[in-house]
Image (cartoon, rainbow over all chains, first blue to last red; front, side):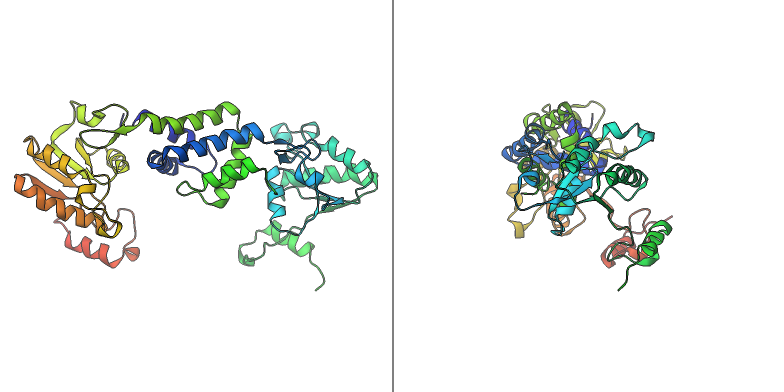
Length: 198
Length: 198
C-alpha cells in the first residue's frame, strides 16, 4: 500500500524489459510521473507503432517497414554475397562497421535441440532458394560464436556447398582492444588456430 | 536507413529515460518488437495511467491515487512525528526500512538559488501549517545529504524551532557495508563528528 497502484503496475511492466531491474524500473516509473503528458504519449505510441508497422522482409526475414526491405531492393548492394545472421539486430551490428555491402539473410534463431529449435523453425529454405537462383557467389555464416551458432553454421555449410557456392565463417579470436590475460581458453585456441601471416 | 523508422523512433524515445543509453534503448526496442501485442499494450497503458491517475496528496504532497493519501489517513501512523523529504521517491526509500511509523511531508525539491528554486517553490507553507496545528512533536529533516539538502534543512530548522517542536536531522556518516578506504573526506568528517557511545 505504500505506493499508488498505477505506479506499482508501471514498475512491474518495466521490469519485464531486458536489462531493467527493480531499481531502474522504480526510477523510470517516477521519471514518467514527472514527464509531460505529451512526451509519455510519444513513448507509448512509439511502442505500439513498432508492433503495428514493423514486419519481416519476405526475402531475407530482416525487420522492415517496407517489403521487400531496404537491403533487398537497394541497387547499391552487392547481390553476389549473402551474410547469414541469427537475428535482425545482428544486421544492425554488421552495418555499423560500414565494411559490408552485400545482402543479408536472417535465420530468426539458431539450431538448438535442447530448446526444440530444428531446421524447420529457421528461415533456411528461403536461403537455399536465394542461393540456388544463381547470382550468389559467397555465403558468409555470421551466426553467433557459441554452441548453437556453430552447429547452425556447420549444418548450413553442408547444405550450401553442394550448390557450388563459396561458404565462409566469420573469424573467431581475441577481441580488439582486450587484454590477452582475460581471454578464455577456447577463444585463445581459436585465435591461435586462425592466425594469419603478417 | 539501416533500421525501420518506427524502431529508430522508439529507441530515441527510450533514450530519454533515466539510465537508458544507446545500447539499452536498442535492446529494449528489439525486445518490444518480439513481445506479444497485448504485453506492449499493457506497458503503454501503464505509462499513461501513471500520468492520468497519480496525483499529489493535498496534505503532504506525496504521490497518491486517493487524496488525502494512505499515510495521511492511516489510523496506524503516528501523527506526532513528521519526516520531511525532498521527493516522493524518498518516501518509498524510508518505508522500505519498516522502521518509521510517522507521517511524511514532501517538499517537492530543495532550496537551490543557482537553479532558481526559492522557499516559495517548495511545499513549506503546508508543513508549517501542519506543525502549527498542534499535534506534532518532532520534525525529522530527511533532505538529501548534499549542499541543497543541507541548506534546506538549516532553513527549515530556523522556521520550525520557534513553533516549539523538536527538529532533528538524519545522521550522516559512512554507509553500512562500505569500506572506510573509499569514504570521502567530508563523509569521514561527518562520521567522526557524529560518533556515538557504544
